[in-house]
Amino acid sequence: MGDPVTLQVERLGYRGEGVARYRGFTIFVEGALPGETVEAQITQVKRSFAIAELRAIVHPTSERVVPLCPVFDVCGGCQLQHLSYAAQLQFKRQVVKDALVRIGKFAAEDVQRWVQPVIGQEEPWRYRNKVSLTATARAGRFVAGFVEEGTHEPVESTTCLIRPHAYDELLQIIITQFEQHGVRAYDEQSQSGDVRQLIVRSNHKHEVMIVILTGMHELVHGRELAAAWAKQMPQGYRLVSVIQQKRNDGKNGVRKRDASEEVLYGDASIQEQIDGLTFRISASAFLQVNPIQTRILYEKALNAAAISSQDVVFDFYCGVGTLSLLAGRQAKAVYGVESVSAAVEDAKFNARQNGLTNAHFYAGFVEQVAPQLLSSEVHPNVILLDPPRAGCGPEVITALLQASPQRIVYISCNPATLARDLRQLVDGGYALQSVEPIDMFPQTAHVEVISSIVLKK
Image (cartoon, rainbow, N blue to C red):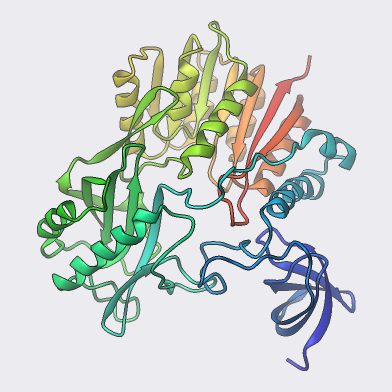
């Protein structure tokens, strides 16, 4: 669309793209950084903004660094490897502040006081203990990787700097056995093939769970594959679970809760330890993938909750009960609600195996169960919230305001929906005390946030 334009990059967008102004128009330039002068080619024009492709960096910022990953420019797994880690943390804090001002309509001076510096990770590489990779057939070969931004196509790479070193070897072992046994990756165009996604998770003991997402058919040689993998694990790692999850449509974007499961090897779950408690995690259950930062996240959340032995705690979107049971060690009673039934069964099991008899868990959508629970005879002093990116539904916010607990601790992975929900809580009679971002995903644009909210007297 015309000749390249010269742009002065002002800031980063929430997805990590450079943002510039050109003749009064907002331009998004992936790969450009604040303070840089760049040449870019406009490729798409929308009503209120345009998208441009970076052609040249005329004047780079001092915060620009050389990405360590050889496929950073195409892989969708990371967005910020070209930005120094200190600047990444500053960017993430600014994203949170901007959301509170722009979406939450909070005063800038209040936001500046509330939002703390981001808690970074001492070693911001090789931190994930779980990867979910899309599979495809490419020139007769089996390829699995994070997808390229804006596509369904996985990026092939022999290494990944945000997963453990051993996963490089492990994934090669898995793919080699697939190819040797004639197991094909799924082709979205022809809707043929076997494996759609490949999920690998490990725990503190280096025990490994492998989940294979397929269509509804049996996986050919599935048990033979699992047995072969068990014999070839990287040094120090041990295979404890291989599960085939089946679904019946032609999409690669598999929702695991819709899939049926078959155990091909070992157990149907894996165990993890957090702060002295042991947790069973099923294949469909959610658990944070950065164990080092997860411990900090939960410690900060519990400090904000300030739970006493007389407090009753409700934990909405509780997953396998990690935060519920950590809170249950301090509380009189804790009640958790989660929509994934397998995770609720895990939570109940986890309460039993940790000897916590004061924890109670309910399966169902929080939007439906929370209003019922909050209107029951059990009255909470503290409520813990950890919703998905969509945030809390309006039914949940309404029920919270009617129940009027003394303290709410809101863990969010999306500053935009957090800001929306905080505005409703503050308008309903609560005071926001602090907002503490935590970097759960270094090298990416994602940020986790803990907000401490108290009922006004």
